[in-house]
Image 1: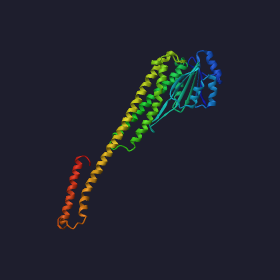
Image 2: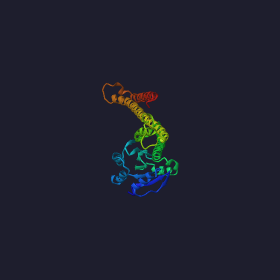
Image 3: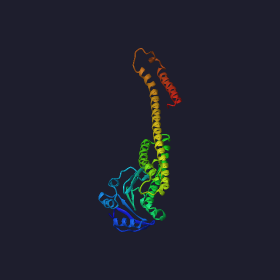
Image 4: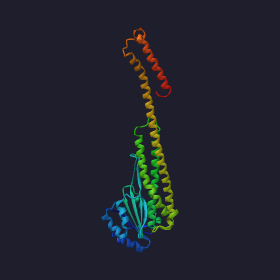
Length: 333
């Protein structure tokens, strides 16, 4: 269990105290103190490794199954002895235009917090350090931990949205550059998939945060969450709303850019076809004239004239010049 439990501590009056190594003793000690709670952090545990934790803290087997399997949508579920929240932190790599998401599962209950992390995008270590530096905040117990994790995840969403917006502006400039790159459409489609991955993390989170904030039809109090924390969760909800509006705008804009790129490609293809048709028409005139004189008829009086050859060549040049001026004037060449 040592390599699975990233951190374990008892927090009393907002200050960290190293508790017993046995989980049941740590929980009993925290509950006996009355103003303390246990915070255990785990990283990608297996079923066998998580069995002890789930048994000691009375975690519901369905929530435990979700925490082990990962690949969950953001959600909030209420059980008899605990509250289960799933968050999906995201990481954006601008060099490769890749959005990757991790998962953070948070169990909170009577005097305990259990966090399970999957992937590398979760900010739990920084959250713990920041909260340990603010004991007044930690005094509020598991509710404060849930708020701090949610706030950190959503604030990072804002940063990712700004980075995506910057990259989208670069794509837009590339699309409207004359004779843009051939792989522009592929880049736009790849970017759209990254926006979709980002959206999968942000949109489903709106309802759980609204429940925690006590907003709208979700006004009934959520168990294990202090009512005094609702204004803080409303602040997180406001930030998340900004993120979702930004994601929606990104999705619409990238679709418009893709349509514009396809339209420009179609226009370029039409231009190319017009040029090909113009050159083909210009080539057809001398070919036709040369074909007529190549049929070797006996009764073609002009074949015996002295000026027939230079006259025919001059006629070809004149016709080619007229066609060239006509196509040039119409923008086909």
